[in-house]
Length: 123
Image 1: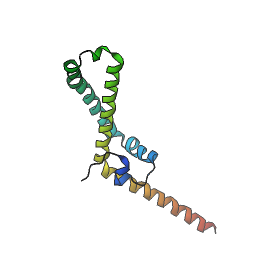
Image 2: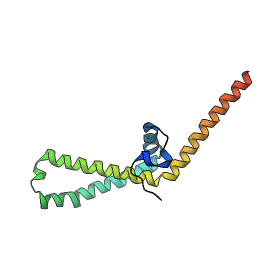
Image 3: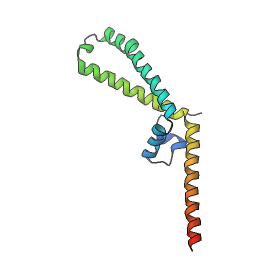
Image 4: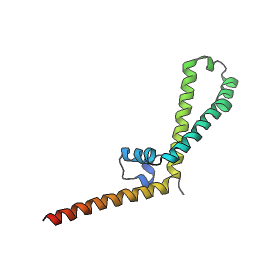
């Protein structure tokens, strides 16, 4: 199974607009998103406490005194972890994305058939 880093590369998301991709990835699977957010929170807190801060103390002890630079490092780390979480979730949810796309397509086809039937009934 392939691992994708960008939504445009995922076969289940191809052909959708950026907004539809965003809705599918971030707004459809609320339970999975909530659980991954809890894991992300623990990863951020743990990695800052046990990885980032010790490395900064060892290699650049004055960085923590410079609040803006330290904040920029932490925000950058958070954004990287969020990107990694989204890439992982995008790949984990591929079967569910395919199922959701099929449901969306079936609803669209049913809507078109209903419209066609009503047009034929009026004519």
